Length: 162
Ligand code: ADP
Image (cartoon, rainbow, N blue to C red; front, side, top):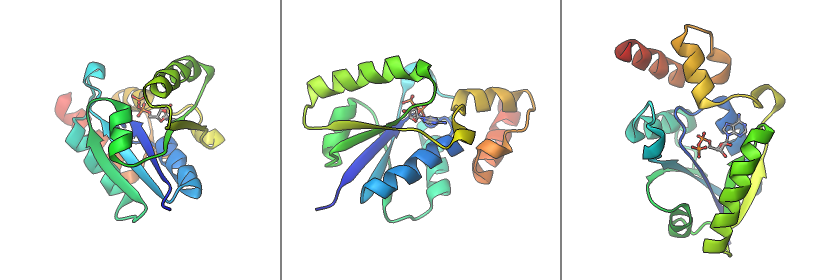
């Protein structure tokens, strides 16, 4: 039986922290579906097509990774994907409260789906898309935290948007 997990997020843009979590998830599951949330309330910097394209550029044609945009309820997306598990990443304690709330709500809506928390390698433990964008906007070097293609697209978009 194929064990499927979804890894949902905004990925605005995908960082090496996200990539690290995804690689760890692949050790436990046959297939990982990366769900790119529209996250309209967060007013993402990159639109959903740009975020999806960057993930595809990073993960290429890896047969065990699927990349799918979604809107609506996370548990509906998980069920559509036949996923048994939702993967979330944990960084600092500040992530914990929100993530536990989200897990509790998802569990009451879909008791058959488990949430599994993973942590990234120490060097990515503090990396977030928003900080990376902010540092890049101020001309800081974020090459350590991004795949080269993502860095290229971020640099280009920052130039365009001023
Ligand atoms: P969301 O809007 O759903 O929080 P993000 O793209 O910010 O979307 O994050 C998706 C998931 O990846 C979240 O569970 C987040 O905690 C996790 N994550 C992001 N960066 C890291 C990192 N550096 N280490 C561990 N987990 C991370």
